Length: 441
Image (tube, rainbow, N blue to C red; front, side):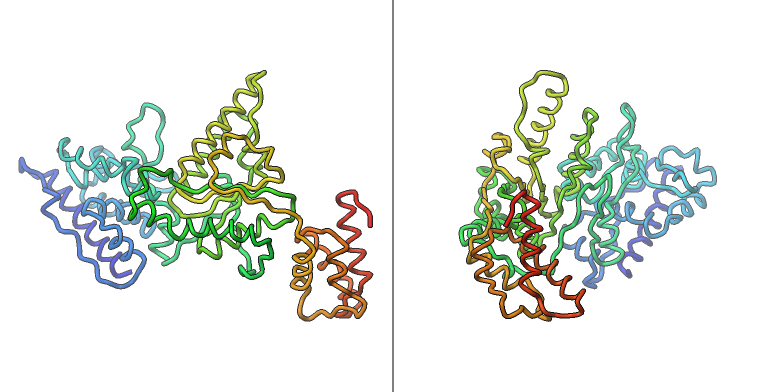
């Protein structure tokens, strides 16, 4: 935290000098360019690494610190300002807003421009680029100005530092967002490894194609100059019956490539109110745009299904939602995976823009045998009349169904205070799985 402490001292001195300069009788105000920001000491902290890797300019460094300080010491700015300007509430040039719950001073875009340019309009205008959509801060989702009411000057919006960057700088790690209205997605993790994924060779080759994109896309687009010829991002469709490994494949793909995987909760995204679905999706995509995450839309038919013939205003708005989705997916720079039980349910406008289609199916007898072998726990024993190969050949089950059977059989054994799994337990478990689909043994 030494670098952050030194940076806070610098901001304090800069703010005092700017206020003194503003109220001085001199016609020439303080020139920000004449001030040197502190040289940070190499300490391998996330804060030092961020400043170094992004090569922040002096004004970018000041903006970042002013956004971070309220999270470290909420009273820091108000203490300085109140000492220098007793009637600070009448000093509009410094901008800022008072927090609703207390009297803390929260910086706005106006505060940044005052700190950098004083009262010189031409000088302050040079720093408006800090809040443009093509700036580093916006592109990487680092900080932004809070949206204001229509017609209100943009710069009056509060300076907001993304929560993940607050955690990164203060705690040294980036905490992943939790499921909420603002972020309708669940983080997927698994203790399984890539070797536990039992799928046909063709599917494994298709998954490797996606992994190759993750590993080499940056080189292809930047070093090989293909960014002008290829659209950013990668879109894949996993289709096939339930329980065939679509979610597990997406999760293990993230684990294999080192990317976080988030499954989108469509029940929280889709709204019956006009415009709300687009709003929810906009928030989601904006949050994920620069995070290098995998977005996994399970049962995507509900959101990416075929557009309908327009017979009513509801149909028109539903089609607008699909069109909006198409635009956001096409412009998303990361990896998006859609999962559907039936490929034919998907809108052709989406599927034409996918780079990869992977068809998941019920595993064949040999693959089912491997799943049965790997499924039951090491502490359990199979009764002598249990022939896993015979069971695999006889009963056509998905990987998910096999796991359900194993769970049932193990619980039956434990209820008997035994570690022996009997054939009858397995057959009853299989019968239960078949009954879900209206089948009988």
